[in-house]
Image 1 (cartoon, helix red, strand yellow):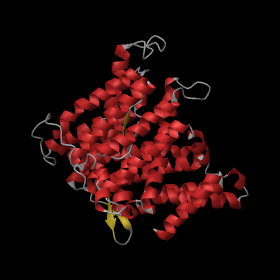
Image 2 (cartoon, helix red, strand yellow; image 1 turned 30 degrees about the horizontal axis):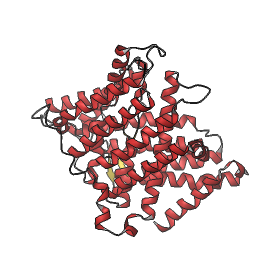
Image 3 (cartoon, helix red, strand yellow; image 1 turned 180 degrees about the vertical axis):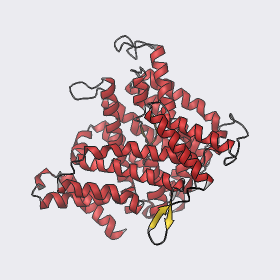
Image 4 (cartoon, one colour; image 1 turned 45 degrees about the vertical axis):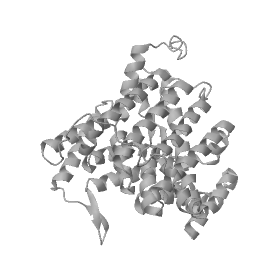
Length: 435
């Protein structure tokens, strides 16, 4: 075991790896309860999604640990689950079963891309400005959803939105949770988002705003409502109604966001751990293969796209250096399956602060955009602002992909635009015209 994970070479041991694995789990355990909450509006069974989330995280993280041998954990991604719910199912009217099929297909395509080694071609085709803008836009969208769930922001006919009733007890609970989470994160507490949810849930139970759970440990919720549901459309409708242009856009967006989210996370976390050699990540193909495999497996189980988590950096900071830490994290996700009764205390007021803080973390990429260059600023701005304002991640990405070639052509920088971007220009233009 020590030889396989190269303990001596990386100057580590079982104690360091175990502590690192536990730390990573605590930092990202919030997804077990937030993901079912985000996917609930689609009509999916929350208990089944909870189980699918834990299993997808455990399987994906285990593959990453054993095959790629990196201390990087995976789970259904924030932003991708919001896109799944609000853009695909609620926005486009695509049944959640068909949306899962889109996740599955994007995972298969990702596997093929990983095996063929054409990752660099795709990364180079999409300009950095659009990658950063998409990440930031998704962050703003997630934060907007959190503010709505907390009723800090509510609908208003004249101005579209306005501040909510700040004396509403449930809104006060969410605001309390936001302050608690901010404090935990500001002082550098690992797992601050998770602990913020715990404190908010306890405060809700004590004040009577949240029902007290009957048990803490219980039976694992059945996967039956979601397991294999992605294949049901094939028996209910013709292929022409399944493989529509809408589904193509969905697959493309899932692939785009997951591809670059994973690449950015992998390289960022690996750089922190000192794994990068000559500006390259050893075993990058295996790491990407682990991520893409987890996405397809997660879709079969019944959850949105599974991806690498930046919270893995907390485990690395605690000493994790090998895939054994990921094995520990995966084991804890399996243990967490027995804590499903706690789902009843994870209300919108409990998850809202987590969504807002995740939005803040994702908005960091705004700093990587050169706002002084107008031809760069316009597509970036439209990408970022369109996501929350149109309530659609896909629309934001489409706006940026359409505007970028236009502004670059007008500036005389057309040679800097990859041919693939011109193809995508017409694809997304057709998306707006026909859909």
